[in-house]
Image 1 (cartoon, each protein chain N blue to C red):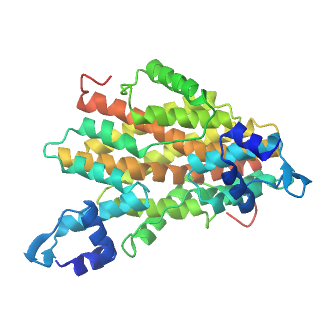
Image 2 (cartoon, each protein chain N blue to C red):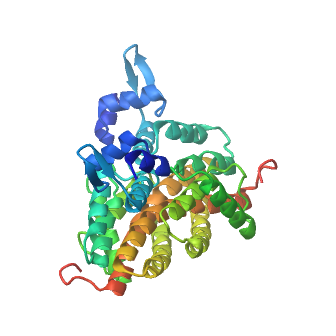
Image 3 (cartoon, chains in turn orange, blue):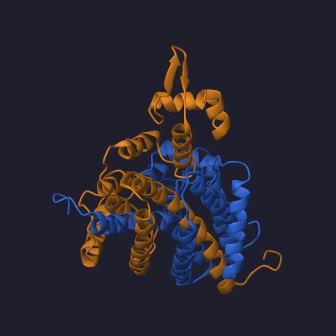
Length: 212
Length: 212
């Protein structure tokens, strides 16, 4: 198909597609003349993935490029991608007071050790968790209980997530599932959590008559 | 304290503080002369909260202003804030194919009804969940199982979250805890989830010797 049809099929404007081509988010089409290229269903799929990572994941272009590069490796190492590419989609940077993030990092490292989690020392998620924990403390919240409860829940989610990944038939499918599941999963979980909070809050604080 | 000291205490540059004052994210200080104002510890606290919502929550200025307005209500209705102000912090907008989001919305509504969740028909999180569900399908992922598993997990997290909110002594403290817990909680959960995924992945796909 021509670029106009690719645009029509995906709802992505032609200039935006050209931008993704220049940025390496979309592989070039097959040249049919010096000024024209042909695209296929793999471009449609890739374009949808890029949009989802941008729209829902709100990931920076550079992070998406890294994830796509990992997806395009022949014979990919699933664990390596999960361990190296995906953590860059969780980052937190807060203007915490000096020393607070370091102290929080020690608490996160202790949590990881206590639970026997196999997580690289330099995993970005360790530092992200420490930044968020320090931010909680920065605004005066005591989250000791919450941290353990969330870690319990995270273990349970991760089992579901890896089952979801494991259902894909080959390494390429597993990676795709890992990327999509991790990024979209954060947003799905946040939306479901907000609904469940509203429900719990209605039970705890009472509901307005006009709303449910 | 003068604005310079407020800046020093919080690490936020003076021009940024002035910007927050103009945008209504920070209440004005007490004027001590036509060109000088005095700030107190409440400004320090508020400034830290604003930074956390910006840095970790990555919320738009307008959303933060709404949340702070709700926090500043005398005799606040905790459930109303949870139900109205907070959902605006979960939004998703994807370039899904026509009809896909509508179909996904029906599935989310069915999930809410099946579980007996007390969630307003117009709750933003319903639509956000539908957008994410449609995005999953857009990239070819079957998430029927995952949706139920995540909903189970969301119910559990919400109970922890409302316990966290309930521990605050008064309505103002509860609101503060609800805002902080919801926003920072999303990020903390995402970071812990990523670590737990790395752990599960290491168990499932094997680990590299140099990393743990």
